[in-house]
Length: 89
Ligand SMILES: [Zn+2]
Image (cartoon, rainbow, N blue to C red; front, side, top):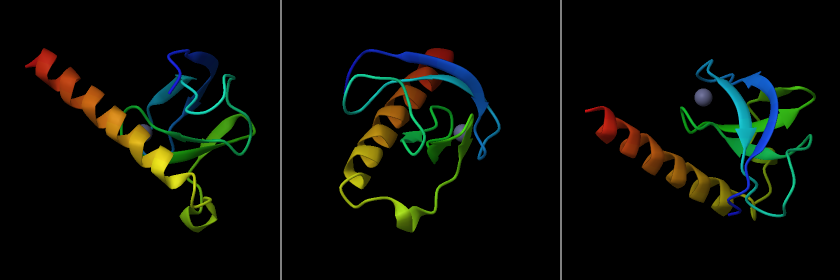
């Protein structure tokens, strides 16, 4: 995973409603494009960039080779959420 974060237009997570305005590419080195998948940094939901918004994708349309990356991204988010919780305790 690249450490490079890309800012983009503020988009609302359709699962938790929180605003997302940045992402880190898992492969390649560019900002998000339509059809790219992402994981919400607040609720770990798998999302897809479509137009200027984030949507919940039909999970059966996600290519099988993409799943391991999404699950790894969810794990990274989980670690961040747990660290955040510890620092707030
Ligand atoms: Zn969310």
